[in-house]
Image (cartoon, rainbow, N blue to C red; front, side, top):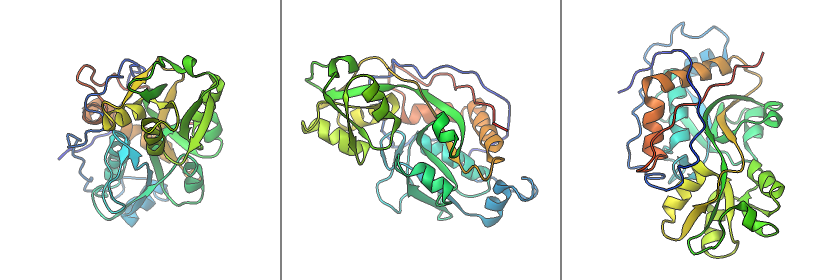
Amino acid sequence: MRRMKLGMTAVAVLLAGTLVACGDAGDDDDDSPEVAAEEDCDDKFEEGSRMADLADAGEIAIGNRVDQPGLGQQDTPDSVPVGFDIDMAKLLIADLCIDPESDSVTWTEATSEQRETFLQDGVVDLVAASYSITDERRALVGQAGPYMITGQQVLVPADSDVESIADLEGQEVCAQEGSTSLENIEAEGAVGVPSASYAQCAEDVVNGTVPAMSTDGSILRGLAQQYEGDVKIVGPEFSEERIGIGYSKDYPEMCEWINDVLTEAFEDGTWEESFNAHLASEDEEAPEPPTLDECQA
């Protein structure tokens, strides 16, 4: 069982765009790092802080994705989800002396359109759901990180002649409704088609309803693994997505805590272990961890 000690800062590098060839992405049988709850949270957190309240309650609610192989996938509503995003959430849960595998954790599906609302309304305490950090979102909620930097690419049928987003000008390209991916598709001249889920987009590509879908390369790698042989990822990245953890602006003290836990994961190898378990291919292993943003006053 892994124990955690808080530490320093880390160095940054973009998530290599060459991590396109799908090897183990989405294969969650299961090299995930083991994460055990800390045993003593007495006086660990400042009295009155949100972390102290959560540790005292011994319960926490997490907003997560259920349809993104490699990042956040959940087979049944009662099961514990798996993926790289989920591992980052588990590290935070464990730091509060809560067992991340226990019934003390409520895992709640949070779609792209629901994430800010869920945090503002207190439906969840944290969001770990391929949550791109943007100025617009930071006006509504807190976002700590990034713990991953990726970029938007294109998923097409395996026999498609499309080589990049440039070849899709004026054509329909699917993406999750409420995501930044739709805005980026439109900016590149394609026609964005909103869908209820990334899984539905991938299915629509496979059955020919749309010629392509587009979102972060980290998400596409998992979907390409799921539909291996039927689809392929093409083109260079045409956006930069900085993936972080969401929290309520009512609790700004959570930012430094999240950054401390992520920093320790960078330094003790847990972050790398998780990345290699869920996202790396046979040819490419984990890049250097990104540099965390300073917490805003």
